[in-house]
Image (cartoon, rainbow, N blue to C red):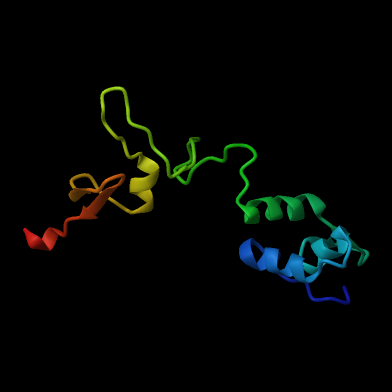
Length: 127
């Protein structure tokens, strides 16, 4: 048996925080301390650097391969920027409406400022 109790690999903010705390250690030791290792039948600890590095990339929010969205299809991630279309319309994409859990038929009030547009969701109770 291993001298250490196997911990669940850290992810997200917890992973980033732990790696920062361990800045003086080697990358292999950081990976091991963050739970990215397995123990062989002979009791030898084997570091899984690929999983560790991929978890770091994910924790930083870097998308290297255009990950599939939650619905299983590929697509772009929200950039929080839109452009006026050639017909003068502004299109707010599905990425934003899904993030806000909006449904077909939800209504908004539009208020125009000098250089901005505000959308305020209309409560269905007001009707």
